[in-house]
Amino acid sequence: MSVLPYLVAGWIFIVGVYGLATSRNLVHAVGCLAVCQSSTYVLLLSVGYRDGGTAPVFSDLRPGTRPLVDPVVQALALTDVVVGATLTALLLALVIQVDKRHGTVDPDELSELRG
Amino acid sequence: MSRGARLWVLAVGAAGLAVLLGAASFRLPHFGGDSHPYGGRAVRAALARHTANVISSVNFDQRAFDTLGEESILFAAVLGTVVLLRQTRDERQHEPEPAPVLPSVRRYATLALPVTLLVGLYVVAHGQLSPGGGFQGGVVAATALHLLYIAVDYRALERIRPMGIYHAGDAAGEGAYLVLGVAGLLCGTSFLANFLPYGTFNTLASGGTVPLLNAAIGMEVACAVVVLLSGFLDQALEIEEANRT
Image: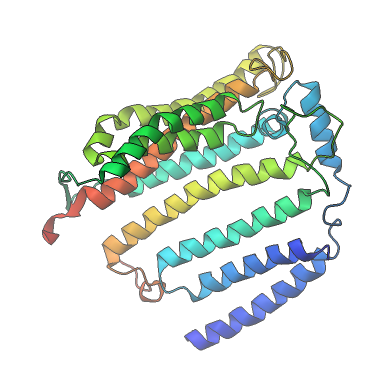
């Protein structure tokens, strides 16, 4: 079944969105956002996969001897991982500040504005 | 909106999205298929520029300008985290107590520290040859420093971690990337274009500017991870509310 990897990527994304919408804890919500993001890695890497392909690195591989998987999507996934990790850190720092100012990390209780 | 109503809205939206994603999946290229027009071109360009690791060539040569944007997101996210996690007026800092460490943990963490640091630097330096590069190697090198926190305690980590240097290193890595881009302009090519000789294929001195950009990114990522973790560790171990004690 050749569409299975794409469907898996969509499934992971929807699971993450479900977690985001029903979350009662902001730390949990940040985790769910990371799940949504990991669906893009699955999608990118399944777009780039090639049957019998090997890594596009020529340090121990003669050019032209083996089929290669797509390096462009791998480069995209690589930067996505690093940027995603730092953005998760930024969001967790925000959660720490929310907890300090409001004394709660439940998004349902964070409805009022405070100066 | 009540929780029940919200769940219904979510269910309708998710079902619609699932139908669209499912329909789109059947129009995507065949999984594992042979048609990778951009992949083939990227491999040819990397070989023409004597870079053995095609992914590094894509990131630091063929789309180096995009990597500048991603690196700036990283820089801005770290800056935001540092601002958010600073000590506020109603908080005070206290000295963390030394904690007991199991002798076996201490032994293995001390052994692993130099090895991890070396692996991190190796991965940065060989980014143009073997799998790896500045992003991955920087994270590994930053992890190595934090083995000291596991092996001894927080005060030992603080002694080898003068934060000013790492803040400056973070900014210097970002700046070095820009300077290398401008150097291309001064050498008569375009911004962030490869202006150095390509070197011998599959040796350390290959790929033109790729190893230099790798090193700049490696320095920025290593310093950024140290800065990030220090912010969170300070929150957990040092900073407490003045009225809570």
